Image (cartoon, rainbow, N blue to C red):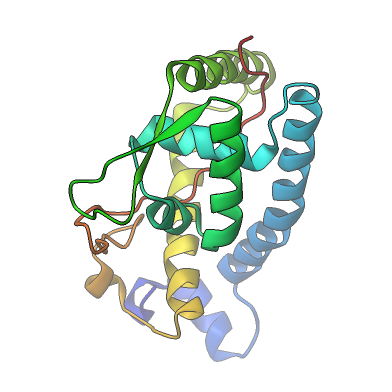
Length: 203
């Protein structure tokens, strides 16, 4: 956010060396992210008990469902993770018959990972279970509430990716909120990380 975008009241607080109301709210969001992530992972692990799948493999299937076939490096970038854990999830998902490797026309040495019919059916069951839970538990949230939350999370992700990379870019340089739009070597634009979803795969 540039100086010109800071509300007048917030700019006055910043000049006084005190946290602005917006800064306090942003810190409140950041403080909730890690506990929320861990809570979601625990809930997913509970729901997946007995299926042979882990929460990470659950997230992997959801990423492939949303984005289509991807290489392991592309999946890792899109999920904001190192390559090694994603490769382990892929290997186990292959053993479970949920994904397979496929030739990659853009890079012969880096195979694409795609869902099998069983994998597609499993993640479809997860999505249906998730939708039912959301309808029941979050009826108080409007579509506008969710759009605002997505906007804030996208902007935070954008700025912290720049900090993690040791670079700083203005809002004008990055364009709008959301993904930075940087393409990988194969010309595919990575998307933002996908959270794991609560639910039980179809059997």
